Length: 254
Length: 312
View 1: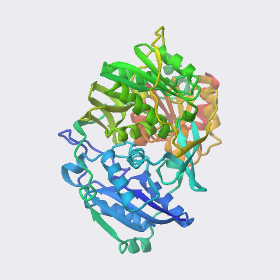
View 2: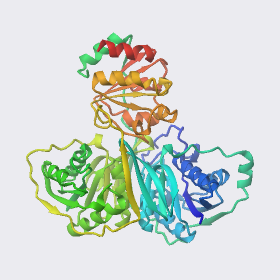
View 3: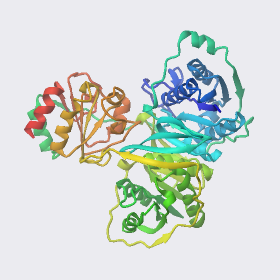
View 4: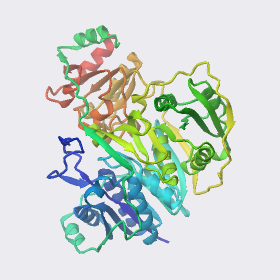
């Protein structure tokens, strides 16, 4: 029996943008800055699409939580091969304080509503760098988790997953339904082609709010400040290897 | 008030990150309890009893805990939490801690704080966002604080003459068959571990291929150094992902970091800029890595690195 997959996609400041801290230290500048799909979520979408191509997955639903512009991210997912999308609209101050705990509750509710057997998300978002959503979604659903996945294989009624751990790799088996988080080496995401981008515009995109899903998004933290990291002064250049060795010896590093 | 530190270990010995996590716990000022959970992990628990400043060690030794699956460790932590009403739960920000703590936090309806680099007080924590390009200070409003801490940001506590009492962790349901541990393949190496090495030598795209990494290994062996790589080198298939230094890989802060053929992308800098001395060898004098390097050498790495190895 083919599986139903739910993928989470977050709209973030593009990885190539040099972020700037706001002068009032409340956050970073996001207005007028290029945004794209979180790179780890692209890997999650790609994996779901490949599982569909292998007939392991029958339908893929993408979810994004955020302001109206999150729909652009969902259209990208649809153009990559996702079948339908759900935009959970969160705006303004609520969006500023939206955290993995809230998103995980939303994903857990939608996974139940959509009768998903598999939830795949990126291992972390490159804006808040939290690395929590998959683990928390799994906990809310009481499903097993296979996080930092670099290989996924269907075996019997479960999945065999290779995980990236410190110092090497780990293999675990999880029963379905399960939650997976995608690590860097899981796959290389495809680019959406123009015909697929056109087709994606016609695919269904449903709108919901956290309230519709019964999820409380009130803030769990208070941001005290966001500041620039301490800068590091560039040192001197040396002419050759001899000078380099001499300097390192003087510093007592070798 | 009490703090629970989840020990990371291989059943026979504690991983060094556990000592950094206890260091972070001591900053909060509560009584510190260390949980050692695993299969045949009495030796690791013995070692935990000797960590300076630890009040008690909870031991959960059970065959079901082989492989440290989050689904089975979570009930152990929840049962311990229930018995002792800890106000703080801390683990290292490693694959182990990052995989486990959010699951525990969700079960307690707490928003966890990941990869903490500073503790201001019992509820105010400092962490990096945007690959280290901004530093966020936040107050947690939850009644229980669940945090993972970056090892390089907290001093390791000594394993000394302490002999904290051990007790059995409260019973919990370990019967979950939702997940199953199959195997671990840890890359065996005589070189020191990347995150705790005093010297790290990393190669980037400038290495051109995986085979060329052997010149880095030769230099590393001379210096007793660990070898790392930039994400560009990993993406290009030169080496495996567990060598990756950067925001999405390992965060290192050795005494000496030598970046070879690495341009210095933001995400790489995030993983190594707290190193005490940074050396860059790159043939491009404009490479951004030189802006953070204490000592820069503009040279062909294929000449400079073997020359350095030979002269040391």
